[in-house]
Image 1 (cartoon, rainbow, N blue to C red):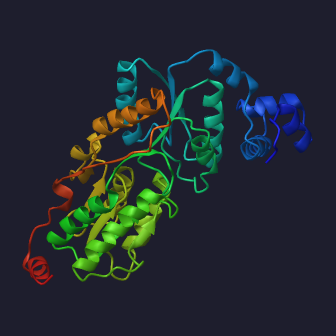
Image 2 (image 1 turned 180 degrees about the vertical axis):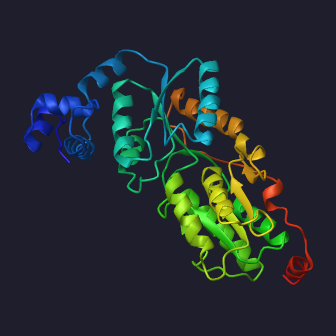
Image 3 (image 1 turned 45 degrees about the horizontal axis):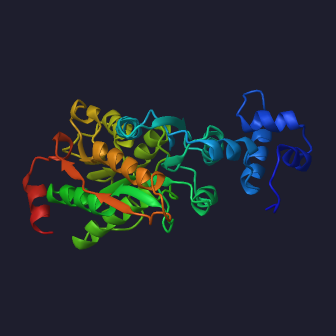
Length: 352
């Protein structure tokens, strides 16, 4: 880390490239080779590069602009959260600049730099799938940049957060499957480094332990949130010597291709495999069979996220102490988890 303020010229000299190349890389211009852009962004992040113009402009006036970074707006949860965040921000007299990380750590760090150059006053952020090193977020915290994390966050970060109790929600969902006669319950999880997924995995395992069911790794498969990977993992899961009779998925986005893959193999849902998921997307009620899913209070989460950020933005004295808001969830029961209680299923349920 350099002690003096870092300039574009410093980065160009260190990487043996032109100043104009560094400038275009920092702006995300498409003509820059990905390897070059990656090297520039990595060094800019490591040296904590900030454009001089940012400090000059922020010293002169406020912009009343909030920067929001989400993994992907094609995910229902994040698009719905953005609607709530934007509405709450506008009502408070702020505008919103939105960026996507596209589940990339590198792009996440680049978008933070882009938003700083755009003179945002604070950040609302949900971490990307690939983010395991949060040094870039810690730097914002150390500089007292107003910041709220939501949904996807990292433990032990001294900033405000908005979330649901993922452990409790997964416990509740797994118990519902057990109550419907499932005994070999699988979990299609997210990436291993994703805290949210691991919290749900812990809740799933606690419910299995409570009822004396198998809690090993045989029925836990990790997905990367892509349709292709989910199809592959589901087919592998259903090819086990003893395939599951119940399935919990980390999100509806994973549940849909998983259910499709099972149907292609002739698996009947819920008679052969009962399914429960997370997010309760609008499509859940239209799918066949309709999907049992954990509903999160997205509207309230978005409003709370903005409220916590505004407390920091409008504080006139010392910095505001971080707050963590944990919101309740609701299990919305539909066809995918309601198995016909045959004698065999009923006997298993009564013996647990």
